[in-house]
Image (cartoon, rainbow, N blue to C red; front, top):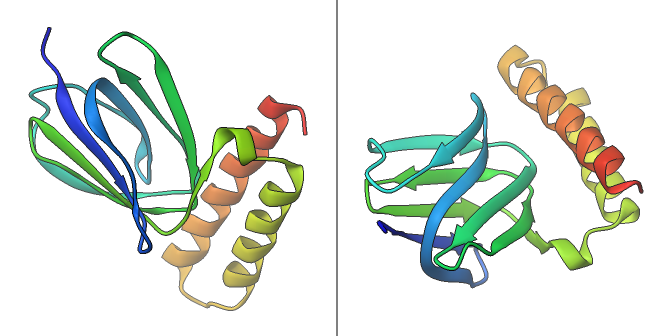
Length: 133
């Protein structure tokens, strides 16, 4: 079975590095599944859940507050502003992220930036609802 190398990196440290079957990304253009052999691409990430399936079929999830992903066929590198492991994600953390996005949205006149904030807020509200918090 073909695998790809996935890395999840923050400014502070390497959060994860290993071989995976697939990675689901909260890309700015919409959710994006990366499989081995994927066409090379760089994409912006919205706040949301990154889901990786490892070689054994086990899923691993983490919340990212935004960033970028670079895909190069056999590797996906996720450069995230902040990463929260799913076991640490709660309603208070999501409310804090939503409040920061609303503040950013209110402080800019740039339409594209406001639209990205709005999309991220909607995504976080969906995550919050799905977690029941």
